[in-house]
Image 1: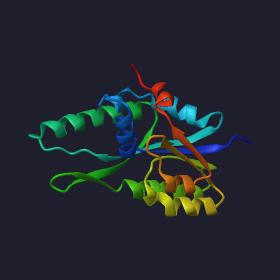
Image 2 (image 1 turned 90 degrees about the vertical axis):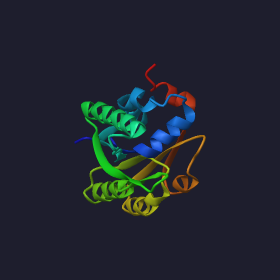
Image 3 (image 1 turned 120 degrees about the vertical axis):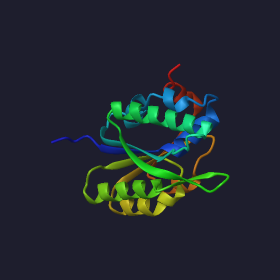
Image 4 (image 1 turned 90 degrees about the horizontal axis):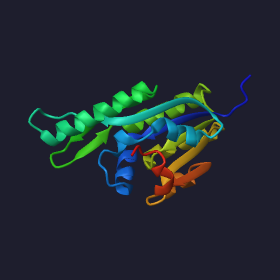
Length: 182
């Protein structure tokens, strides 16, 4: 019987992208990030039972040059993740005229957290997100004796998620640099 702690790693792609973009100057950082090395580093000696990346899909009209560029880069990212055995859950981006809002991602994360806890698929959920909408799901899985490990960013931590987690780690630029392909 495997006695290693089982972990489920969930990355909120939009949140991750924006925090990396605030730290690093390259807009292509997500395409040059070693996701597998990052998750192995987060796992330490624990057993990764699943890794999921959650993201709103960019849809762009043919004449939207910027949108088409974003869509192509996102498709490259998806190809890279799938090639490395990641599961991807898709939301969508809602165009409200002057800005885009991601929809459907939080509910995917919350559902996966709860289903995994009820089906006893993991011992610890490692959440790479700063979205406070997840707090009710986190509270429920903690009540079910599952651990929550919050991975945030030192320059912009979520104090609410720090409060609602068992383990917290705030990443620094220096720690993240080892995962950037130069």
